[in-house]
Amino acid sequence: MEFEAASPVLVTGAGNGIGRAVSLRLAAGGAAVIVTDLDGEAAEQVAHEIRTAGGDAVAYACDTADADDVERTLAQAADWRGPIRGACLNAGVGATGDVHTTELATWDRVMGVNVDGPFLMLRGLLPGMMAAGGGSIVTVSSVGAFDNAHPTSSPAYGTSKAAVIQLTRHVAARYAAHGIRANAVCPGIVRTGFAGRRIGAPAAGTPAAAAPATELKQPPLGRPAEPEELAETIAFLLSSRASYVTGHALVVHGGLSIV
Image 1 (tube, helix red, strand yellow):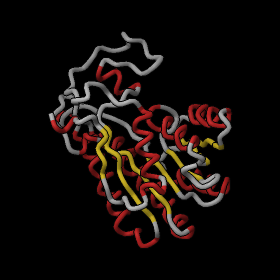
Image 2: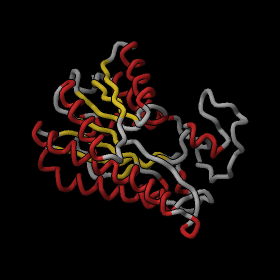
Image 3: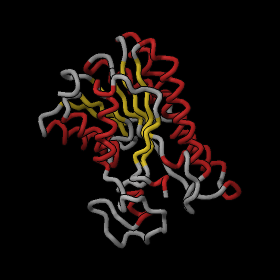
């Protein structure tokens, strides 16, 4: 097993897409998974999948942009299997538009979920990790933090995901002495419900005609990533196999930035 027996690892935005794939992958590696999502029913469904397969999981509904909700969730989670030693901070929202067309409400919502959410989670998780002697954190940023060439790129989304990288690097630098590693993963196009609608490649179970394809730059590998491919990368970074990797922003985008 890659993870210590029943080692608790928390995943946000775990009800579908990348978060769901990460939760299932961590459970397969022996972790006890704390499945959190704004949609509590979706979180419980993922936890049920894990338990049905013989793994260990608990689900909580959590709005990561709400400080009180985060505090409550982390308190409940810490009582479940002891100190949380790993976390994948995946919850996020997207947006489209340009600076002059972006409503302030849209900007605030994206920053609230994509930046405030990881900050609030980190603020709550780090004291416990320090007391436990260390831990590993992976945040989910995006290639959108670097690449503004797409017609669908958004100032709110790209800026928020760049902020996630800087926040992650801060944690890596300031908490390394406490045995805590922090890395960011930066996906490109991933075959989730949201991305599928943008690239005309629907996620499993999504009708092909649900939305028209949007013209996006395609990676050299010629296809979007599967959520499970991101999950493998994140599981590696969370595990002891990546014991000397910290402060890194790893792009997982099929070569998108070289075309």
